[in-house]
Amino acid sequence: MALADKKYETIHDKTGGDKTKLKDEFDNGYLSKIADVPEKEPAISALVYQIGLLQEDIDELRRYIVALAPDEKPLPTISTASHTVDFTVTNSKGAYALVTTVVDSSSGKAVTKTASTTLR
Image (tube, rainbow, N blue to C red; front, side, top):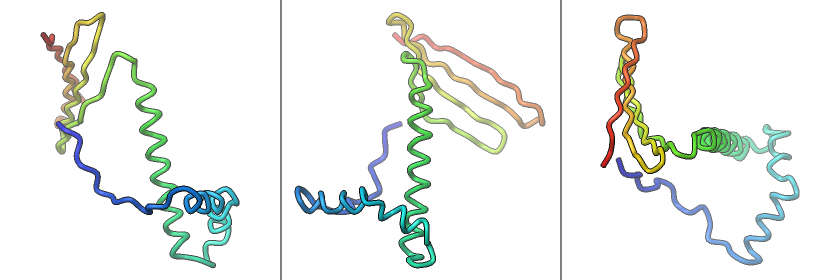
């Protein structure tokens, strides 16, 4: 599965001194001041909250990627109401394999099955 195109657009096109002015406001703690008194600027406070959630998601993605063994790369997970399928590509001394893990929870008790396919 290919990586989808990004859905967002560039927030600003500032460079040089103009970008430095934005950074200066950040460095001076402007966002923290808004977070301390959200009722003064509720619309901006809501955006700060959402940016914080994005930051948490990015941190979690970084944690997940770093936790993977250097020779394993995650692929997309497919889920239905009672089944989950995970794919992983492994590399052991140049021998690649596609590992497929299926979890079936339709019976109320999770049953896990794993298959490994050698890639040539």
